[in-house]
Image 1 (cartoon, rainbow, N blue to C red):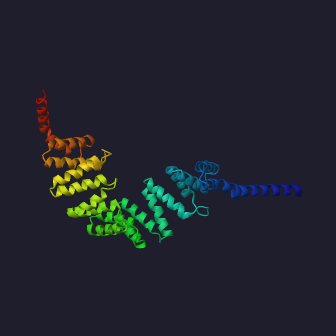
Image 2: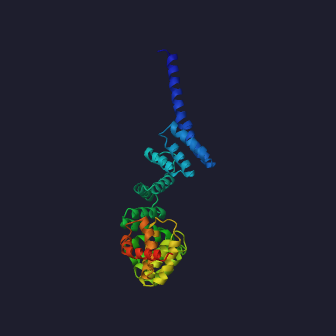
Image 3: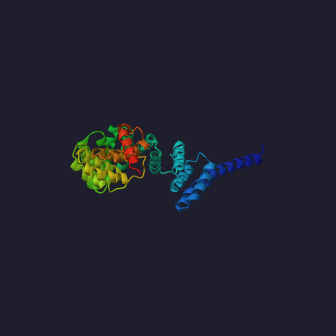
Length: 335
């Protein structure tokens, strides 16, 4: 082999390595970063297009998947964003230009939104190991443990969140609900009262404080909480049904009826459990007041939506003869 040939081969190899270096370290990263640059200029659709191109060029480029995921997220396309972030997780982020904390926060939130609670929990546990001083991660982990019926761990993590940030009402509220569901009324009341001091206008806090009082048969104490909760659209029907229930327990049916009628008048979704309870209990109140036609009308509407709801089928059977008699009277009264 001549010296000239050796030199040519050496140069060819050098050019090849140089080309590989340029593609890997300059051209490819530029393609991957193009989406991020466009996104910083709020050009979301262009960022998505650039991100897709980068991923197509190199499906194993974690940064390209990350930037595409961020672009999808900015456009509100969360399912597609999650798919890209899962690819990032699979490819790995070590040594990549991907901020780990931000990445794990986003993917944890997306997992939780997509009801993949186990995966979300894993991410929050990793975040806690990395940032043990951050109360938000303990809070989110506590909520997720609670959703998996791991109440022991949920309580532990929520209390840790509170110890790190004693001025966060949502942690007290979540702990209060958890304790209430666990039949720990005294502890639940203390946590909810602490939440109320920090966020006095939160209808959810008022609602659950009302539930704690009602379960303790402190109906007079429960009613003001339910009244405040009923001012919020989300809790309106539930709170009014609970208020009606308090008056029913006190045998004060004349006061129960207006509360339950307000609940029925606020119904937007006839299929919801709250709507069914509102009509069912209003029917019971009408029955107690011997306004049987009105009672049957409410139970008919419940039965039409859910035939096996409590004893509504039995109630309608019980009053079948009454209905027939009323129909016959009406027919007889016609000229």
